[in-house]
Length: 355
Image (cartoon, rainbow, N blue to C red):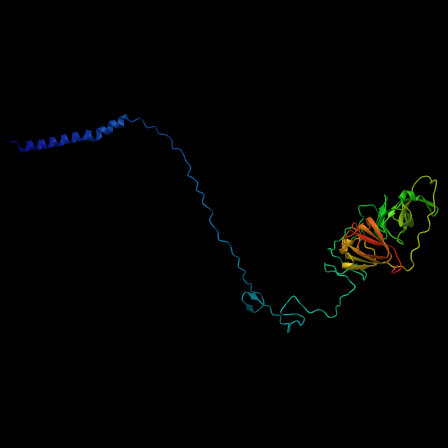
């Protein structure tokens, strides 16, 4: 029978054997596995920036400006958010002021409107009792004439006389007369004129009427109101400019016949209408009208009544373009080439009323 010491030795041996068996089961496979692994190469870490996150900008609340009443330095009664000033010097209200409508006041009873002044659409009256009433179109200021200053010289050939510029035509000139186109003889066929012992050469036809067609121009020429023949016979008075020329005297020269006599104490009177048969707006006048756009009548005339004198009507402003001559009489229907195609007109010869 084993002893106690023997039993203690057996217990120790069993414990040792158990520990020896446990070591290969746990540690040996791990060591062998570690021996067969490839060597791990240590590499430097790669820097990778963190991803950017785009966040929307923060919403800022809109600024609201509050108008705060500013307290004045003087004492005023306050109502709500407004101050009402009180003037101690005002003891009563203005009797000419309407409290219900602040924009309307009493009209001065001493003011009277002159019925002879024509009022344009712009609100300002024209000057003079004989001013042309405004027509259907909108008045347009003409750059040829500057108010309060000398007129501007147009781009086309003109003659400066009497503080105005008058068109001069050196080519063929014709007028519509009694429904027919009548050509004047070429200006070169008028011949050299002997005036005051000097020779003067015809230079062109000027759109200016007698008796204004007289005297010397700033260019050293002179105007003569004379009778000019048509190519097919007869004739009509015209204003002709004569100028001097350097050189030997001409072989032939003729004295000018006396200018046609104008009616003594004659008058000029015409009425224009916007529609045929004397309908629509009308405007009487006794003055020449160089720029109908300034009064709203350019290309707006459809019928005409000539009460006195002989009148030339032009297709362009400043007495330019083609012209038609009308004597005293009624013209309820203008030709298609003239209806609503008139830009200016002038009185060529004063006449007897009704003649």
